[in-house]
Length: 150
Image 1 (cartoon, helix red, strand yellow):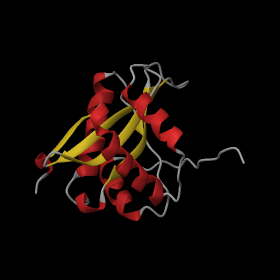
Image 2 (cartoon, one colour):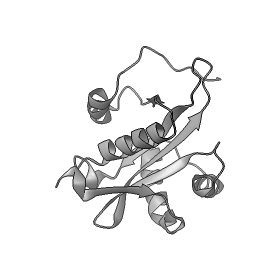
Image 3 (cartoon, rainbow, N blue to C red):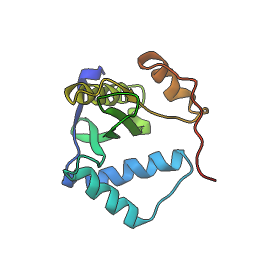
């Protein structure tokens, strides 16, 4: 199977059930679970047209969603143009190694370029070794360390 067998497209309202399965698996990987109202709100925002909200893409194989990504454009104090934050990226276990992650990231790169946002960044946990093998090929690791409110 080649990466050309993977189709990346905008999230649709009819994707809700498949999206829930994918996002639930993604969150489980990071040992997180959320309430149903957060699922509903997030999905609604992903489909909305507010430029401050996230955009959702899905990767399909044989007409079935097998991966997702959520990304957002925002202002940056060090740049004139917006930057793009890729928050969530997931490929189902049965689709790993098929180019789903790369296809989704490249689709975000394409969207960022079209929006005039040359910078795309994302975070991952240090233990995410499999994904980091891909990230090391298509991105540059930075020296920044994330802190958050305790």
